[in-house]
Image (cartoon, rainbow, N blue to C red; front, side, top):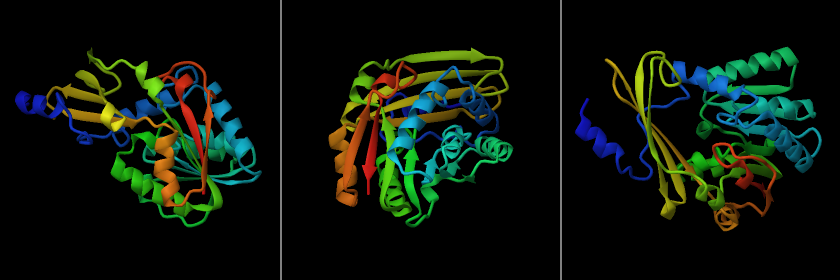
Length: 277
């Protein structure tokens, strides 16, 4: 391990350099993420079931009965199953095979009207097919600017005329409550590996980019050092207008104060944006 090189790469990261590794395709970590998704009492990988129910009720009131919905980053189908029970037709897309496999089993058990796709949503091609496209749990904000432009084009093309894109975002107020700190952990077996490891954690704030970064350096004996990075962005109404109105969307309605409590993203400061094509 080249400590000098590691320090140079991680001490002062440059926006938007990504980590060398990804959790969603790691065999061990993706299983751990699924466990977190399915825990109804914590809002780490997914929000609490109460928050999910409140969000689904809001979505159901926003769209017409029997709408066709594209759920991007659907995870194990927690929103998709609830929306299908309300009579909507859902297509869920997620990069994690473990999450999609679980979602398909639940769909088959419940006989739900859901189609699941195991794919990177930046590779999707749909044309005038959906009444609603959704990205929940601040998933739109994790995209770096170049990816964001691609995603907006994919979304607009996928929507029917007068269709709706819905996403939620952390706000400037939420970021003010966050702590940007350094910490470390050791474990004989845990989230990052079934083998003993040391994990060095550090979070950063880039106000000029309206971005945050959570960085994890995982050191496992006799294995290459792993570097995970999670970028996120916060938006206000001006930012959202600048992103969507010039590219063919007509108007935007914010939904504030829907969620309660804290959670990793200070849920009570999260804002939803309903964006009409």
